[in-house]
Length: 251
Image (cartoon, rainbow, N blue to C red; front, side, top):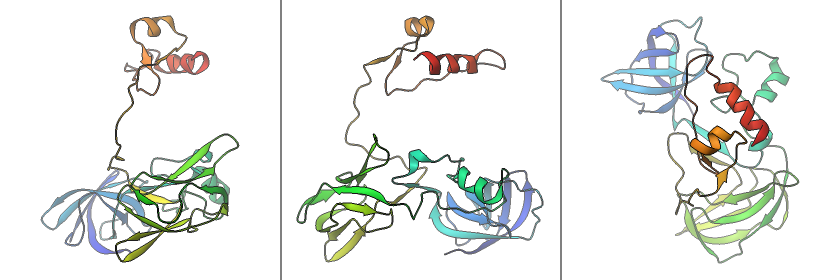
């Protein structure tokens, strides 16, 4: 539920300033202007706030309203991620193209993960199991070869009080119920996670297996590990993209 948190006083490209920021938090997701553009609060000082807008601001005027959501900028996690193409704020580009064409309308809103599609789900827990964040509740076949492991939200822990039988479910269907003290919580395959909060982990596996890129100069002087990360810095025309293409072709 959104509420008014300020009025725009200054606009410079994707950066907007507003006055009246009493009920808004740092890094909060906000909706900017009459078109409700996606934005994020990046600065607070007194009753003024600075907002980074992640859409085109052309035509926006001072005096327009900024609406707070009370939530951080987040992404949706669940089955269907690897079958879609997203922009930087997880808007599904194929759905937008089908609805409005090749150019994205300002303020366009679509579910990041399909709410209607059903996934073949198999539970991996039973009633009475004690579970905590990261516990695998079940698996959904996202493709013929890719098994999506549905895990409990890292912030939750408790006792499984009900488990859905194996079958086909949407990401919003309840697949299990978790008893937390005297309360019972429905668990689905869909999670929302703040983009600026790292997912927790128990331990990291060492990256000690080389990724053979097929480029002898890289494999000899700049080896890359499977599961690791590498960067290719350089000015315009230095061959960064050519190197990437070579790795994609021969690795």
